[in-house]
Length: 360
Image 1: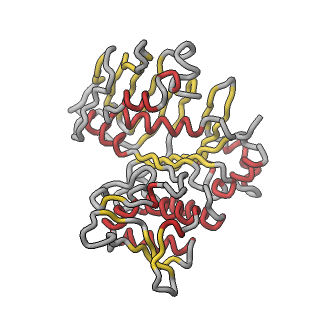
Image 2: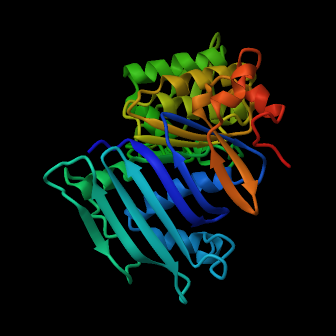
């Protein structure tokens, strides 16, 4: 079974009453503030916690099931999802309980590519389960493939660049297997891949946006230290600089370049407002990195940047509107916009409210 994500049907999750959306290689969400872009992105974290057996902790951390259900359990007693892959699907329905948990009332998957080893529907249970019954280990079976794929999803957010941001602090040298969601182990991760072609490409790409940047300095603080912090060298001087001496935009771009140029890309990358703090030229470089990601990796990103949207094709765009107090997702129609596209970019049409996705 191919594990490329084809379609998501989601019901009753946060501001989403019901959406049915096809997923492509790049899926750039545009819409007004409060339309529900971040809520849709949050679904990917929700699903990853489900297969990692962390659902109940996720529910508690977000304030209970009423914060996750569309206008609370009195309006929406259950959340349902169906995730369609190439050759199969996985679906579930979860009900709010009196003990402020979400309980599985349905969970099943099906292989649809005709593979003889996994015929028909695999029922994982009806009622009572507080965690998913997807086995927590990869294998060649349908369940193993679904687990591996959803576990590989990565949701990144680099909003925090304050003095206490993890990316500016020490990280353990051993914490280097995968880049964290907030890049708090960026120095350790870069140290691990130092000397590779990917590392060199990251450095060259950062120089395109910050010409003064020479290289990362990733040595532990002393010979006995098992911790490393993000430091860097400046062209034309021997002085070593700290991450605190990078502008917020440069630091965020370093994080984004590392995500998109890392050696082992996730099968799905989720980015929320990657344009924050970036110069228009940096946005064009970022868009090029996103478009150059291999087809084996899909990108779902939400943005408010007209400049960034102008770098993409109509097929890459998902319009997010709010209608009848519910988030709606749709693809723009080429037939309706063909006469405009020769003269305007997609972002320009969005700004002019030709394609929707603006306050109304």
